[in-house]
Image (cartoon, rainbow, N blue to C red):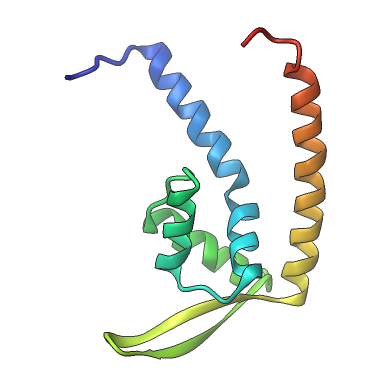
Length: 120
């Protein structure tokens, strides 16, 4: 069944996408803080969490975090092809993650307070 989107629907989808993008850095740093990660594993975890991400979105973010010294990487041999680049969080990255988590908790609390009285 094909659904016709009107202008309002398109704006809503854009807003939802922007909300996901806004937390993407926090989520990527959190995933990598758990253990070193290969980009396709990061994408899988994000998709499993309903934060749909394609490689074209993730790689620029990983490069930006690497250039900011929040991530580092190492090459590992692969049994199924060329060596793979695994990302790890740095000390500075952990500090930034801690600040982002605090900010997220504050934001989450504020949003919950602002929307708690809405009829569901």
